[in-house]
Image (cartoon, rainbow, N blue to C red; front, side, top):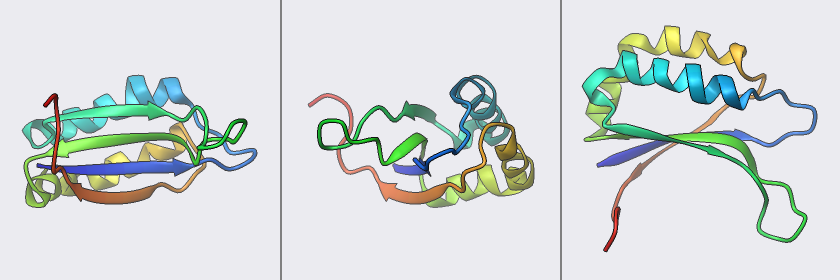
Length: 107
């Protein structure tokens, strides 16, 4: 399984509408990707590593897929529509990372 993390750096005066991201954007992504998206999570940054330090990322999502190919097959045909929705919730440029999920769930 792979995880595609889309992270939005926390920058002063940046706009990020968490409600829109959670309630509209990510359901849109899941609907368009269909079975290619096994599930997703949404995170809201609260704090950094030291007391009083701001979070590195204001928000992020993690999209779980069976493989990179499955992600590309689900996302690629809809990339234009998904990316066009970004200005509806933020003015930040996302940072993307694809990871292999090595351990997950409860052990």
